[in-house]
Length: 415
Image 1 (cartoon, helix red, strand yellow):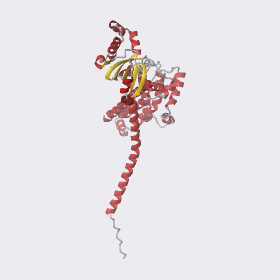
Image 2 (tube, one colour):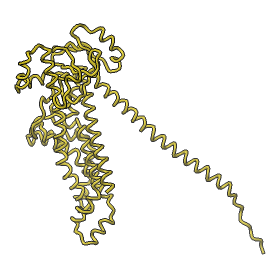
Image 3 (cartoon, rainbow, N blue to C red):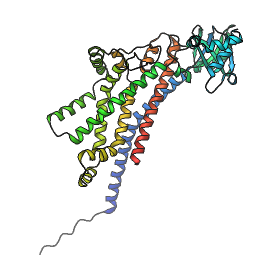
Image 4 (cartoon, rainbow, N blue to C red):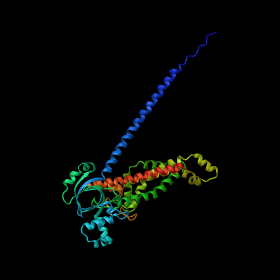
């Protein structure tokens, strides 16, 4: 009878040591991958932060002006009013220019005279005027720019600027971004140029795109996910949607120019721009809505069918309410994309200069990105400050939209 061979002895400490080394190796690999992913993201955030800081500081500039008006500045308390600072400061300015007191009120009350005054004069709240902080100053289209310095270099040499200023010249820290900048009409003069026509044009475009793209995009997504069977037509629609989502935006501009501007003879108006941007965002809305609908658990549908609900009742009362968070987020992000689009509108023929806001769907228009492009293209340093102020406004609008998307997603998800 042969002897039974005893099993080999298992050394438990050695096995634990090997397992520990493998675990440490995995942790080092994970940390290395995390660092490799985090470094580009951190670098991108730093670069974006530096760019944003540069744009914000460019909205402030030190200037030496030779004013065509009185050249006087007024204390904050003298000109401030909750809804009438322009009138109060203009009364002080007209009195400083030598206009008789009995003529000032009729001048401001006459509609045509007031329109001319508003077009040629800009009431600004300056952080710094001739060594005094927080002053009101009236600048005009006839003012002569003697010098323009960036914020930081001008801050270091402000005493030299004051000493070098000749009689009749004013040294100011000009804040280009103020509430009046958004409320003024466009102008060929950077001192009185405003963003109102471009701002209203962008709002009209976004409103029309929402009215057109949301029903079409969400309806298409519901049809493909809930109603369409695996037919050749459904596969063709899905293929086209996937391809259209990756088409460059300038191609949509060419399509809009051909179809809406030339064939339909609409011209480069607000409606043509909205239709073009609708074509741009519909594929994005469809993709986002389909993903949100797919995320609804099938058990909810089966429970609704088990209770006797029809297909339309399941879609309207079960699927869409549970998918609304994802659909809303996708729609808001798609709409935010349309605000920053420039190429389709330029190809479409949107005007670079519109003196007044559009008054209808068939009016010529401009948008904030086109206005920024126009100002940057000007050979004038003051227009670059106005462009920086417009960029900050555009980023603020985008931040509001992203905040709305985050809030709606959290709200619907909690429900």
